[in-house]
Image (cartoon, rainbow over all chains, first blue to last red; front, side, top):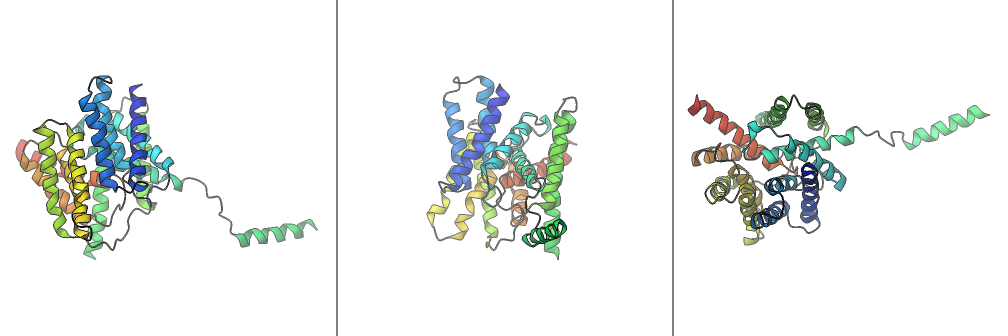
Length: 148
Length: 186
């Protein structure tokens, strides 16, 4: 249950930051920092609203997810990609090693890894139009001749 | 030519750091049923991205060398808020990042001020380091120095990639903690 909420948080954070960044034109740094500040201070003021584990983890996951949303439009062209990389980020966060615990930038590194790994996905989908128009025409002519 | 060598070196350094991060998880969670598999798949996808994805651009943006001076300021502010005021890392980075993002409003024509928010935010990530690892202010200053060098060297790499600043900060903190480990802890 807790894992599910954290996954949802990181997906929402990535998409919301991207929206504020590009649709509301606030710039990447402000959209990420301000949204995380709002979420974190809300949970700082009301610490008893949610179970302790969620109160502790939601701000961290949110700021990590919002790093993904800082991507430019050239890099991430759809919300689906952001959602997938939010999911990957949450998986990395849930399994993160205690060796790098407390390192500044570990969240950013995981966000970078998740976004980079999602960027490679388009190379695995089969191309739809690998035949050019000319080849298609040629094939039509050849098949017509064979019928006669 | 040296410029191209520096470029290749930075890309390889980033890849090594990211694989190090993933392999730390891999070694720790070997008993787990699905985690090692996920990590292997992620590493392969990462390699494919490095080889094929168009993530490196040549920007024509004129970058000032002096913006690097603001990294330690962001880092120290965030470190102070995090470890002395006990606000927690997320709120500290949020405050520094939000304040930093308003600096371009001071003078809208200036290209110098436009680059400051990212610099401040990169510094804030260094300041998020736990007091158990960054035991003194000198650690933060040393990490800021490395982050400044990396930020200048990687200015046309990973452009517009979310998490670039975080990766730079993480690389700097890792290098610094390794050096401090060699120097002081034996």
